[in-house]
Amino acid sequence: MSDDKAPAPAVSVCVIAFNSGPTLRACLQHLQAQSFRDFETVVIDNASPDPDDAKIAAEFPFMRLVSNAENLGFAGAGNQAARLGRGRWLVLLNPDAYAEPDWLAELVAAAERHPQVRSFTSRQMMADAPGMLDGLGDVMSGYGIPYRGGYLERDTGQAFEGEVFSPCGAAMMIDRALFRRLGGFSEYFFCYCEDVDLGYRLQLAGEPTVLAPRAVVHHLGSASSGGRKSEFAVFHGTRNRFWVAFKNTPAILLPVVLPLHLAAVVFIAARRPNWPYAALVWRAFLEALKGLPRVLRDRAAVQRGRRVGAGAIVRAMTWDPRDLMGRRPVIRPLRPPTPPAGP
Image 1 (cartoon, rainbow, N blue to C red):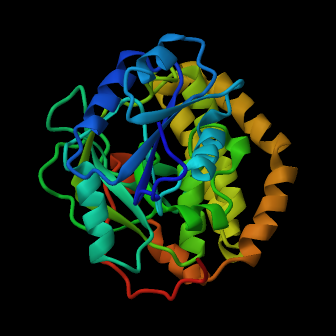
Image 2: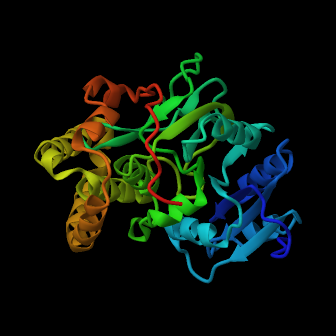
Image 3: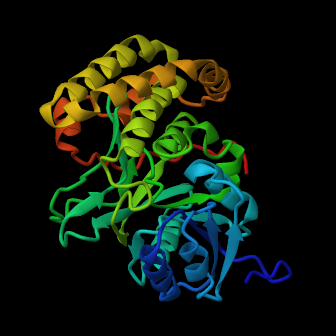
């Protein structure tokens, strides 16, 4: 349990549980074994129908259990974690992600090497396929389609410490004050792409995200949402990708990105393995259009606060269709630091 009178830890780790079952136990066991000890752990039981989530979390006295009366989604619970945490750094870890013993130590070491950087992401390995990558940070294509860089590639040492477009919410670390200043996650996203939306806003604010390749987790992926191709994942992913592109893309780029985005969605849906999801993709797109008034209001605020030109966003994206089709990682050398805008 946390003690509000105790000195604030350096790091607040949040695990958001929903029907997580045994994966949650394994996740917390790996957290318990971390070599870096100056952290607190908050487990948010996001109104899980499975009572075992709360029971499993209670097995670990080093962490604080928060039980929500309703499911706030990953986005809402992530914002809740930022309010509850006391550390300078907010770390988000999926309940189906198992951290190497030096994972937190490596994230903190990366932050010490790069004091101008306030957002970091981990090297994610497939927990059920040894030697295969789950992701090296998130990539934004010029088609407005984000993807996890290196997903399902063999790990051949291609990762190096450099900039990626955005952190992956499965295992990320961000300055908690910066997270809150940017408004945290957009809660109407509920789940999927809320991390890319945040990463895009970090880009617009001139705040880089750095891949820390020695900070390693082993990730199952989509364990709480029924799998990577579940109807839940396809619907929310399709809807939210459109919102990310529409909300954040600078105006001068919208006439290019939006048509490319729509063409890419049609192309992906037309591939034979995706035929069973065609009606679901169409329903998700209609839902995205219904939500545009709210997205437009947020877009106005995001663009007013932009600190970099459209050229910087063009350079942060990939425009090579082979990257998108092959889900190739895109890691760039660190740019010269931009003076921070605020705390």
